Amino acid sequence: MNDEPAARAAASKRLLAQYEAEFDLDETQRAALALAGEHLDNAERLDGAVREHGTMIRGSAGQLVVNPAVAEARHQRSAAWNILRALTAEDAGAVTDAASMGQASAGGAARSPASVRASEAARKRWERARALAAADADGVA
Image (cartoon, rainbow, N blue to C red):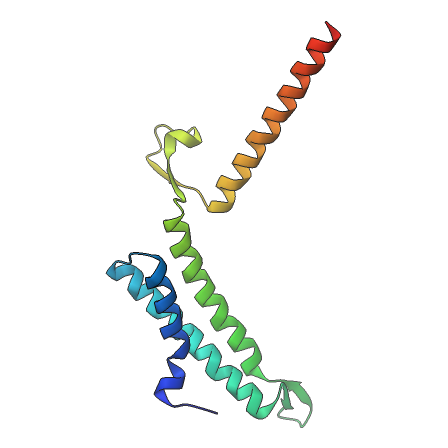
């Protein structure tokens, strides 16, 4: 397994370089990216352990079991993805005002990008349905 510092930091360096090329990052975002990068670096090291020892290893009773590094690498990538998704949600304007959600007195309300997309899709469906109903009403009258 390659544990040289340069090899360990490869994923975090690539991640930071990609985000710096596309976004103007503040210190909080850089810290979040550093944490996501650490998770990805850990996942790469765990992948190396799986390559070295195999996907299936001998358990305590000699039976074949899935190498725990497989699941742990997946967990590390999931943790990195959650951090990156939170950063992307902020950059995509996931936070909307409460009034746009019908919560005028609720203060600031946050909506996920998926919720915003779903609302927009529903609005477009209703507009299409109303246009079709209006066209049918014009044709019948």
